[in-house]
Structure formats: structure tokens, C-alpha cells
Length: 98
Image (cartoon, rainbow, N blue to C red):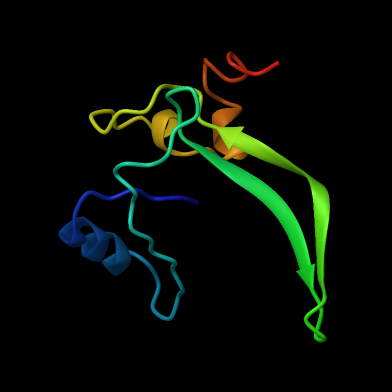
């Protein structure tokens, strides 16, 4: 799952509740992201790099967007995360898509 924290103390508290020797990925939140029609987005593309450093690009990528306009004052994951597995449960899911 995805967890969002506002400060280091909250992260440390969260980690003390987890079993020892587990692995976590942490990343810095981008406070001023590029926006598409006032919403956060990411671009999904698939690339294969062989051991000979040949690069193969699958041409059909796609854009994932959040279902609400971006603002740092909102604590709503539907504003900040573009994951389809989360967005599909939001009331505005698909509102802006064709």
C-alpha cells in the first residue's frame, strides 16, 4: 500500500509498528509538479533493455491522471496519487476522460 506522511516523526512512528527486517521505499513528494488540465499525472511507458544494451520501446504508453484538481491544501489521496487501483474508487473517477 501507499502511505503519505507530512514529517519525519510520523514516518518513524509508522516504521516502529512494522515487523523488523521489512523493506520500504521512500520518496520525496514534489510540491510543484507539472500538471495536465490542473491535475497531477504520470506517463506509463514500457521499455526493454537487453544485456547488449539494445533498447526496445513499446509505442502505446498512456497518461494516468488524478481525478481532482491539484492543491497542496488537500489531504485527499484522489488529488495526490494517480494510481488507477486507487482512483477507480473515487466519486470523480473517469469524469475527465473520454
